[in-house]
Amino acid sequence: MRANLKQETSFFSDFIADTAQQTGILLDNCYTGKAAYGMSDLLRNNADVFKGKRIMFLHSGMLMQLTE
Image (cartoon, rainbow, N blue to C red; front, side, top):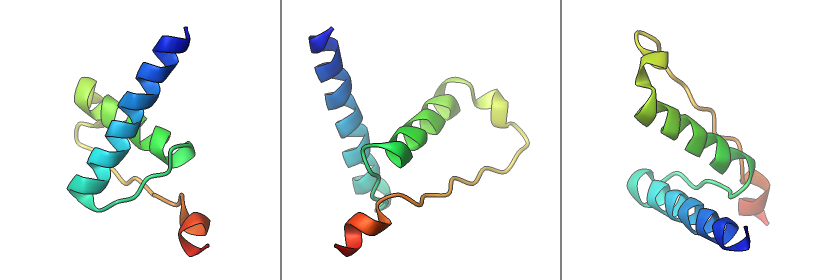
């Protein structure tokens, strides 16, 4: 179980780094990062959920961390 957690953490860290590099958006590794990953995964694997709809992802994480 511990190895699986380490593998998931590494994958998630890569997702956060890739998002920052590709979009300039900084995600935290807690709430907003996990929500962004979940939405991204849903878009990739089940895009029909959003067919014909507008999508807005409100990123509000890390504001306090960036000002300290």
